[in-house]
Amino acid sequence: MPAEGQTKTAAVLAACVVALAAFAWPGSASGARWVVKGRGWGHGVGMSQQGAFGLAQHGRGYREILHHYYRHTRIGRAGSHTLEVLIGSGSDSVTFRKARKACGQRLGRHRGYRFRRSGSDVILRRVHGTKIASCGRTGTASGGGKIRIGGQGVYRGKLKATASGGELLLINAVGLEAYVKGVVPNEVPASWPRAALRAQAVAARSYALATSGVGTFDLYDDTRSQVYEGKSSETRRTNTAARGTSGLVVRYSREVATTYFFSTSGGQTESAQYGFPGSDPVPYLQSVRDPYDGGSPYHRWKVRYSQSEMESRLSGLFSGRLRRIKVLQRGDSPRIVKARVVGSGGSSKVSGPGLQARLDLLSTWASFLKR
Image (cartoon, rainbow, N blue to C red; front, side, top):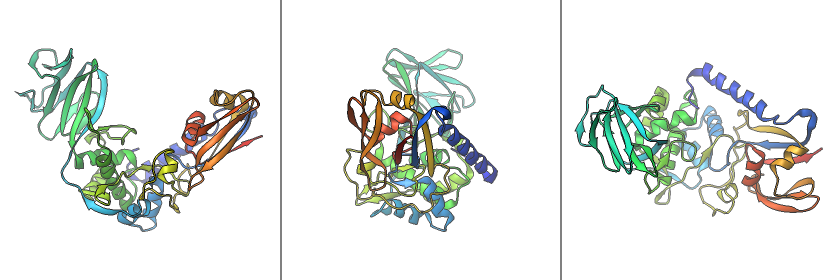
């Protein structure tokens, strides 16, 4: 969610409040029989971005912020890394400009070109169709430090187009520091305090290295990894934060920590084994109080559903008429780990994240009242 300046930040927060109002009334008020009260937005594990914002406003530096959320860790350095980020798929071709070479051919920097899939291979063509070269399974375009990709924007590094499963995978091969510059403004507003931006930069760098894959690409460009939109999304303030923490990562023992982060904690983060039920405890991902998270419009929220809406959303988890939702286990914070959906003719258990998904809730920190 990139933003610039106090006016734009106010607009973003106003939009959040409007979105929350829409979220809080999914059914008609007159037919509402269930009230769900909750806190926070996201899985609750690791760094609360709104909490980091609050800590920065109260004078905490980025190292203090990171140590608050990732306990028993230290700030260390990472070496030079290139990441391969999936930025598109599903098409048979992609156009690009500003490249100086591709598939062994020199290109005109100001001319347009196209990679097109041909069976299991990739062909390099001029933008209007004349074939230049066969590239094999992958075509790579590079030169000048950045490249304009049709329908995507401007990216640092290289463009790789790989034929896979009847489509082209569009991959940006980019250095770690350039990747971080393309992440931070899409994860937090650029107008936030410097310490919060720097904490986000270190967390983004760490998370990228800790979760890089070993397949055709390393990371997604969306919330399956981190939101990354390349050079087109960069801002001066977020680039300054990235440069000011260049090479720094969160480490636990000898490993780069998996620095999960999320929007809003509701006042307390959650331990990994409860935020992700079935996972093992992680020493540096334990529940902590989050004292300055209250400025978020999602710190507290409320949802109303009618009986029929609840029964429709929870269909298959009970039989008969829906009677109640009984919480069986909560985590170190009040987030739900396990619950039972009770019907007049039968009931079954569901995980907290499962219940959250069924009811489209912002988090698993929830309580249920049937009126």
